[in-house]
Length: 158
Image (cartoon, one colour):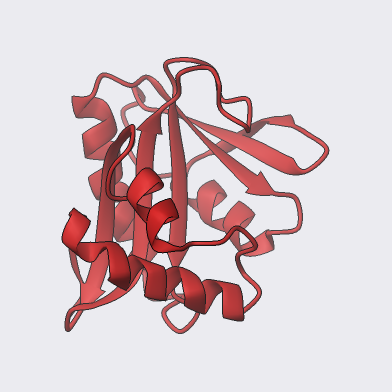
């Protein structure tokens, strides 16, 4: 049974293992070593990182940060910035949806009104996932399709 919980620094190596599996499957190009994970998923300026676990194996994660306006993706200051990663062997099991329920609650608790997902133009699975969650394209760059979610709307999932 899949359980969702916030990540802690003790989860760093398990998150590295997940990111390595995504790199090996060609679904991630950014390295995910321990220093990167500590800076972006278990520490740093994130608001929360939720993990999806089954038998203590990390099957997915979703991170939510508050943009300071200096985002490499151009996320507006004060908006949430979201990232989602699901193990290549765990796709299609509803893990992303379950993670987003928890992340949306955290976004509301933090007073965010908008969340942006900056997805690579060729990441068809990522585009479809965020559309299914209710994110809508609001701008496109040369490398990314940027989708936004209105946190204040009544229906949490599209």
